[in-house]
Length: 171
Image 1 (cartoon, helix red, strand yellow):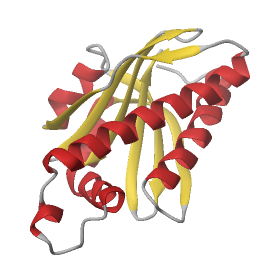
Image 2 (cartoon, helix red, strand yellow):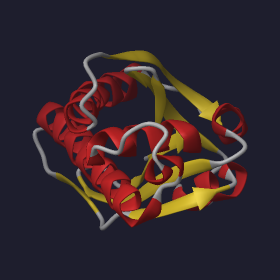
Image 3 (tube, helix red, strand yellow):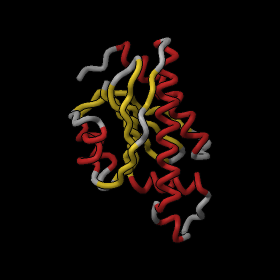
Image 4 (cartoon, helix red, strand yellow):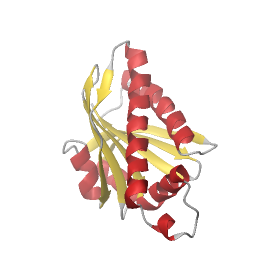
């Protein structure tokens, strides 16, 4: 898969919006885009292994395909704890639980919507995410499943505070 300039512009526009939304929702003061590349999913899965949280969507409208927010489980737990106000060292902070899972599902939903709004603005057409699906487990299985069985994707690497957050797209 080769990342064309038009695709890069579209992905970067969406990624900027998604990064801002994630920062606000997760109550993080800093965020930056590390890279935008087409890559094999093995590389992405290796960065978030051994366990990851994957929030996946199907995308329709001006862009058709799949979107996934992918975070190593420890980083996802840290973001969820910030969102729900769990204190470090508290038992609730050591596992996701219902509130943490709900917070991460909402984080994925907001990130996908913000990403697609940024892309839609560039395209001057609407893009709509499906209802999110959240999974926790082996990224080598979960990420390709969330992306419709793809082996490659457009991947945006973000640093939100001190947490690596990845957005993977198959268009």
